[in-house]
Amino acid sequence: GAGVSQSPSNKVTEKGKDVELRCDPISGHTALYWYRQSLGQGLEFLIYFQGNSAPDKSGLPSDRFSAERTGGSVSTLTIQRTQQEDSAVYLCASSSTREINEKLFFGSGTQLSVL
Amino acid sequence: GNSVTQMEGPVTLSEEAFLTINCTYTATGYPSLFWYVQYPGEGLQLLLKATKADDKGSNKGFEATYRKETTSFHLEKGSVQVSDSAVYFCALKRSGATNKLIFGTGTLLAVQP
Image (cartoon, rainbow over all chains, first blue to last red; front, side, top):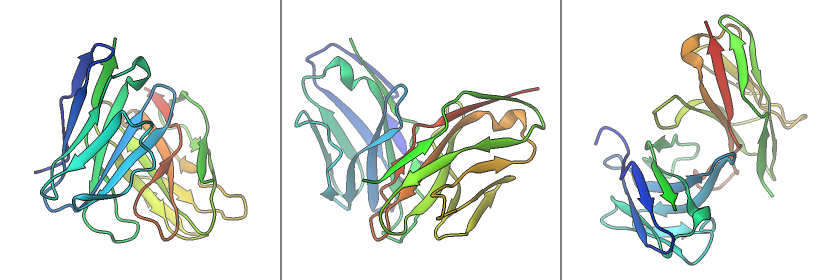
């Protein structure tokens, strides 16, 4: 695709419900990253994929958070039993190779609101 | 650990004013440094980068110099425009790591005509 696509752009859910956030990276990009941007906070790293494997999951805040990537393309971030503190903008980024200092291309994010 | 600290905003300037947004970092080894920008309603995009000490990154009239002695990477522009209004993020990438970035909290810049 022309850019990194994320859906939905906005999601409102009730506390305790599960949500799935989708990221469609730029075609051919092997590396994919999830970040979280909370009000007043910087961008917090969540997880990194190279192909379908996730060598770095160190940023996932709890076991309620999980992510997968299939076919080396689309990724889904799942949050189970959502809590109000999960409210944030979830950003996805991709890059073309493992080349050092490769630029990241970001999507516009999913605004998650947990009521 | 590795971290980035940048000045809190918002920064409000008149058009054609000089801009400085301070950024300092803490890192082991020799990180690479970046500035990303987020325009209203758009995704983050790379503005400039520097990969070793004393390198200067530049783009669209913005500049930042990698200062290892002061662990800084301050963003500057000589004459800002209304179209520069955005949120600016300083970030670092650890040496030898993936392209995973560690970001600062972002600084909102508002340029008034």
